[in-house]
Image (cartoon, rainbow, N blue to C red; front, side, top):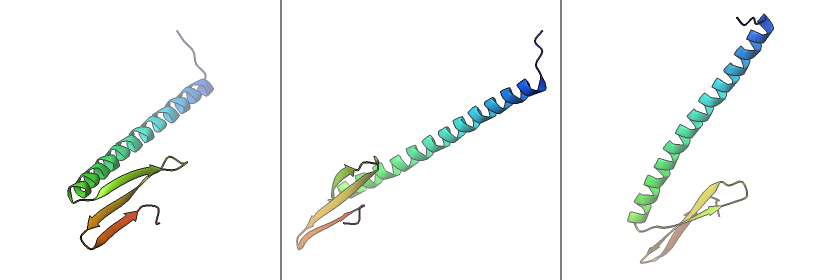
Length: 84
């Protein structure tokens, strides 16, 4: 039979707790990312149906932004997430 000291049992418990905490946090962030992605896709679909043209961009931090342009009879309207 195995004999473990209190120190070894504490170490094993701490490692399991850290791994479980990381796993739950990662799972939660993945779920939030999927929800945000679904919302962004829905918004993109609605804007395209309304006549907007979307141009997706990325910068060095891998954050995605967009520029939306809509041509109307009296001119062109545009906006982007970078604030330009």
